[in-house]
Amino acid sequence: MGNAHSSDKVDPTILTPKQVQMLKANTNFSEEQIREWHAGFLRDCPNGKLSKDRFVDVYEQFYPGGKAKDFCKYAFATFDRDNNGTIDFTEFMLAIALTQSGDLDERLALAFDMYDYKNTGTIDTAEMAKVISAMYDLIGETDRKGDRDPKHRAEEIIRICDVTGNKKLTKEEFVAGCKNDPVIRRLLVPNA
Image (cartoon, rainbow, N blue to C red):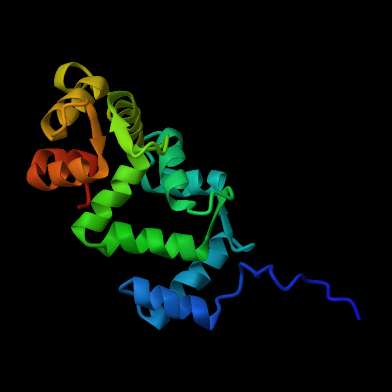
């Protein structure tokens, strides 16, 4: 009697009671809402995994006038917590919860993680300029002259938030800078 499925492999299409409890404890969603989200997730991703290409498709629906690909590269990497190239339902729900209803510090920390795509623990001007440029692409912003130039914006933000003077931002500097400057917060974390 051979077992066709390895016991350490979890079916990504099944929502277990343990997952429901974990999501209830870590989000503001009820069990009913979690189950509704799960049904919708499976309609869009029948195999229980959201691929990078499908992720881009979803963003393109929300931002039809923009170019989502570059922005999605950074966002996808942030949400794919186990770095397996897909987003499972749990990763998806934790990302939704953080972006929709997480407290300000959590949402700013998530934004930092997206900007720190090299995973160095700091954001430099080049990293920030690339993500700002990707955000402009996403929303269809074409005016990038003067104060709107991504590199200029990145330099200004780092100049304002960099307490240590090393021309890089730590997560703490980023969070504090965004909290203390509403203009920077609106630019870097639009829904915060």
